[in-house]
Amino acid sequence: MAKLLIIEDDLLLNEAYRRKFEEKYDVRIATDGEMGVKEADTFEPDLILLDIYMPGRLNGLDVLKELKKNQKTTNIPILVITNLPDAMERVLQMGATKCFMKTDVGLSNIDEELKKMCPKDKLSS
Image (cartoon, rainbow, N blue to C red; front, side):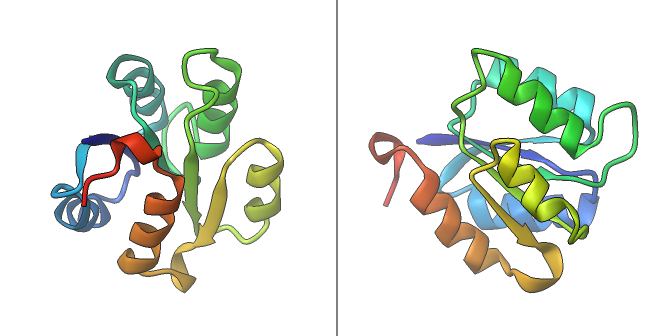
């Protein structure tokens, strides 16, 4: 089973993500950027779902930068979900695999994109 790390501060959204994805993925949730970077290093996820706008010392852009410069996490596919239209192009240039606007995407779209990004040997049916 593939491991999915969700880095998102919205607790209601996290619950929706967990319910949608826990049957297909081993899901871990980090509610701030610092926790997300640590979880990525220790949990060694196959996929990351990342929010950009988060409170605390590290926002999603900082997290993305940290993940891409760490040899252990640099190749993990990252799907960014954001409310910031200005961030979309920037996160792709920084190495995110895909970026969606929160207002334009539903759980089924995210699910389909994660399936495409998931290493084939880790996909469960």
